Length: 385
Image (cartoon, rainbow, N blue to C red; front, side, top):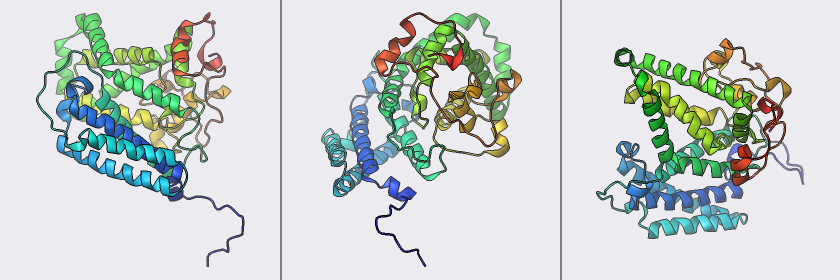
C-alpha cells in the first residue's frame, strides 16, 4: 500500500520527472531547432560548412532520417514546454527554429556536386558532436548516479562552456592544417620507414594500445608543463576555471591550448605511421572518453580504475582541494602518473571543490586575453590563477 501523501509535502522528482520538466523540454526543443537550422545549412553549403576529412564517412540517408526525426521530437517537446505553462519562450523559439529549418529545405535539401572551398569551418562537426554527445550525456547524467546529485542541466557557467565548445569545433579546419604542418615540417626528418612498417604490421588491437600509450606520454609531459611553467599555467587555468563538472565543462579550453596540445599529440602518431583505421579508432575513443571523464557521473569501474582514466580520477585533477593540486596529468590511462608518482585516486571519495584556487576572469574574451595580461607570478599549478 502506498504511503499517504502529506498535504504541502514536496515529493522528490524521479529521473523521468526531471527529464520531462518544462525547463528541460523547452531547452531541448530550442537546441534541436537551432541545430536543425545549422544542419540544413550544411546540406545547402557543404563546400563552406563541412569538414572534408569527415565527409566521406557520412551515410547521408541515415543523417537525413535522423534530422527529420529530431525535428519532429523538437516540435513535440516545444509544444510540451508550452503546455506545461513554464519556459514557453524556449519552446516557442524551438518550434519556430524547426519551422525555419523546414523553410530552408529541411532534410530534403538536394546534395549536389561541388568544388571544395579553400577555406571552410567545421559546422558539421559542431552539429554532430553537440547533438550526439549532448543527447547521450544529458540522459546519462539524469539517469545514473551523479557526483553532484542536485546539479541542474543548465548549471552556472554552461553558456561560457558552450561558447568554447562552439568556437573550438568551428576551428577544426585551422587546427588540422596547423598541426599537420607542424608534425611534417618540424619532425619530417625523423621519419623512419622501417619503424613505420613494423608498427603497421602489428595486430590492430596492439596498434590501438600503442597509440594510446604514445599519445598519453606526450599528453602527460605537455599537461605537466601546463601546470609547472607559469605562462603555460595561465593558458591552462582557463580549463580549470569551471566550478562545476559535467559533460560540457571539459570544452572550456583556451584556443591556443587546443592548438598546442593537438599539434604535439600528432607528432608520435605521425612518426610511428599508424594506419588510418588505428587513428580513427583512437579519435573515437578519446572523443568519448574526454567527455566522460568530465561528466557528472559517479562511475565505479572496479579494477579498471588502474587501467583507464575514469571520471573520479580526472575529477581529482580538477579539484582545488589541497591534496589534489598538480596530480593526475594522464588523459587516457593512469600509467604515466603511476610511473612518475603523480597518481591520486582515493577509492571511496570524490573532491569537495573544483576550479582554480585563485579565480580567473570570467567571459570568453577576458579569458582569451588572460595569459597575456599582467605579470606572470613564479608560482606553479593551481595555487594561483
